[in-house]
Image 1: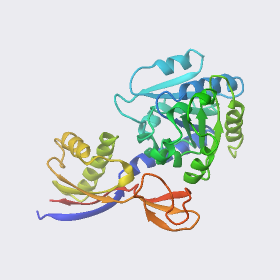
Image 2: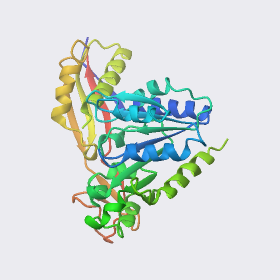
Image 3: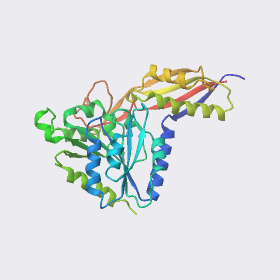
Image 4: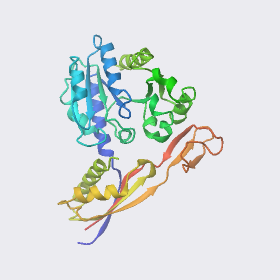
Length: 221
Length: 113
């Protein structure tokens, strides 16, 4: 047979996007919202999730999908609170993808559930490229990481629906410029909301809880 | 970076397309890669060599075409290349930009037999 040329022009991540759309469709059918929490390692994803579960556990049914390269430390902490958690170990992989979430949601009873919180692998780079089927993307940046991160890792901040600046309790000891930070985020992503919090002291968390509640109340059913 | 999963998706798309076209082997694959995807060529080639073993894509060569990062200023509506590390519009000096190019990641075409 002769050599021939085939034109494809198809996005490589299209397969991932299609699975993500199916997941959103399934969640919508069950009136479940899913949020995807992304940040570098150590910014406070797990702490934020624990505070959120504490706050809403009597009001909403919540499940957590924990993504980590290895270990079940985070899922064990959450299971210890009596909340359903599914651990995904990526085995070296630096992000979650839609296929992993599809498998994980297969292990969650969606009936009577209100919210699934996905804790992505700690990484500001790859996580931004993979649609997981979540309804909202949450990005956390903590004070010690520095205020230059949005311009160093723009994609993840452009994909965010809400940006949380965490650890504001230690702001006096760092050079993070909180006054100009809203302009930095608005420049990259005018739609994103911005909240300053401390998961340690609880400062600002009411704003976060209101955002979560607003999202859950606005399910449109 | 996430070249391993990128190559997995790429390979599955290429092999399935070649199968539909009743090709028996893939000789080369041309990829278009945006500068902002951060995809490392050497890493893609490494994983491709490894993951394509015993598939009809084994031994295929990979060609890379890179697209530059392009930004659009939301104030002045001009499009400019991102040739600096910041996101400042060269006309109005404001940092209100969106990315309009450089996130591409697709298979342009492939040569099969």
